[in-house]
Length: 188
Image (cartoon, rainbow, N blue to C red):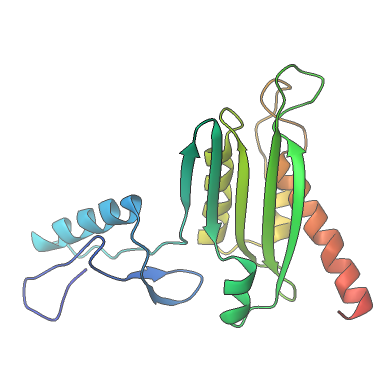
C-alpha cells in the first residue's frame, strides 16, 4: 500500500490490488478489498510492516430473492491467463430434497485441467441457500491453492434441513473430476 512518495499510502478503489491467481496487480474495486487495504495502509502509516495478502475477486449480490456470487477466474479469463481451464455446470439442491424448502443452486466450477488447481466458480441460488457461505469456502480454497479434487474431501457441516452429505460444492467437484478424466481419455 506504500507509494513511491515517502510516508504516502494508497488504498481502495484508486489502486490496483495483487490478484493471487494472476500473480500480478489487477483492478478490482470491491468494498472488502478497500477495507482490507485501508487497514494495512493505516497500520503501516503508523510504523507497521504489514503486507496485503491479495485477493481472488470474491463478490456477491442480492437481487430480490436471488443471490449471485463469484470468485476466482471465469473460464475465458483463465484461458487468457495461460491456464488450461475445464468448466462444469451443475444444479444441486441446497439441502436434502425430502426436507421441505429445498431450492436449486446453479454453479459453474472451473479448474485447470492439467494441474487440477481450483480457478473459479459462479453460483446462483435463492436467498437462504447459503450462496455466500459456499462462495467463501471456494474463495478460501483458491486463496490457498487447493485442487478441485480437494473440495470433494472437505469436512463440511451436514444436517438434512441445511445441507446434504455431499454438499452442492462437492457434487460440482465430483462432476469436474469426471469431466477431467473424460477429457484426458479422449485427449480433448
